Length: 511
Image 1: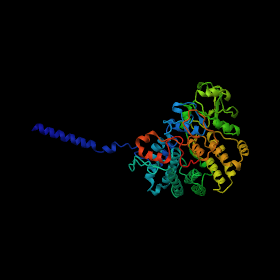
Image 2: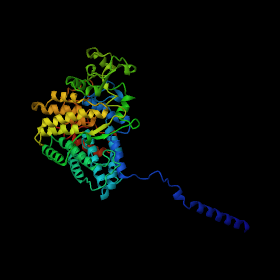
Image 3: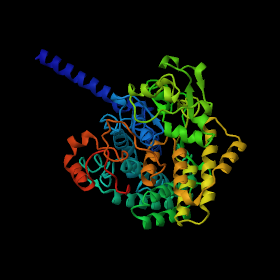
Image 4: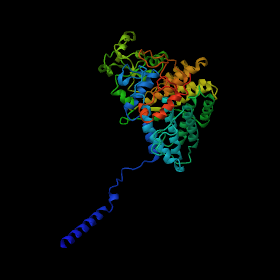
């Protein structure tokens, strides 16, 4: 009995101690400085930042495809770097836009929209997220064509894990609707969201961003639906597009938070990518003052180890672009005729200016807006002289060089403008070729506008092993992962759009 009593007392004491220890347990074990949730404005910032990729490897889609398709930057190397250089499918790099935007960017944006749509005090954050979401879906559908849109990003909220693919025509109509509604709904009646990474909560600039994206989206439809295109271009101008370079949508970088294209080309890929001959030749032929800002050549280098500062020159006269159509072996057959010592002797992107580690990246610029308005004026869709918009667009991009620490003298700007007036007989060619230059390093937009406009008038890549049956790569194929996880919906898209190849045109890319 005594033994049992001692046991009961001991058990009671233990329970008492445990109960005492449990008091305040939850409070003690909550980390009061590690947030369990973020404000929607901060999540929106994360989505915007992720648009410019999360590491250097994410940029390989642009480096191996977009830049090469529009013949601005090229590599002679294959394997993991094959793509537009050989006009071939590289299953490691074609899905990179898809993977980053669906898994990272849209996940953030859908969460912001879901959290703010019913809160009138966060209407500006809600509508800013709608604008950025429209921009992201433009890039996705421009890259792949028909994609998951209306059901995208709803795996968590609505358990839709195999979203249907929507036709690009329906996607673009909704993108335009979203930009129209969201831009109009932004209001100065609310306090600014000062944590906004793009404009510090400046609602007026967000409005101009939305309408400038609307102008871009409207102009995509020039060949397939000119009536809708004109309607939304008019709405964009009425709403108010960018008025100066101060309105540009820009991500700024630092020595710690790098420009990832710069980071990749300054390290792992330093000796692998070169400026393409069509781009360099155009800039040289037109005495373009941007050439020494864009280019550097390590004159006489016979290997990567000789690409040193002592050989570096940005003198326009010595720049030599790498010709299209060669690999790292066959390029040796044309070195002499190009007056270079080796493949390492061709011009490269300047890592001291446009691709410094802290160089900015642009999503849409005043220069691009003015050049789109120049084309719209040629088509009779907006008031004003096309020549004036054209000159303003060129000037804006020349002045934009100051963002890279390379301010051009006014005399150089004026001389270039005087030498390049708009010729009505070849206006669309001139405007869109200047757009090509103004979009340098914005691979997604350069690729899209090249397909839409047909300019500049580039020559097909002559690489003998090309897998492209037509003239140029028209889209990226869907990721292999979609075949595994969403094959039924994917096959519906392929049946509607065309073969899952580099040749298939997206809806707005009409011949």
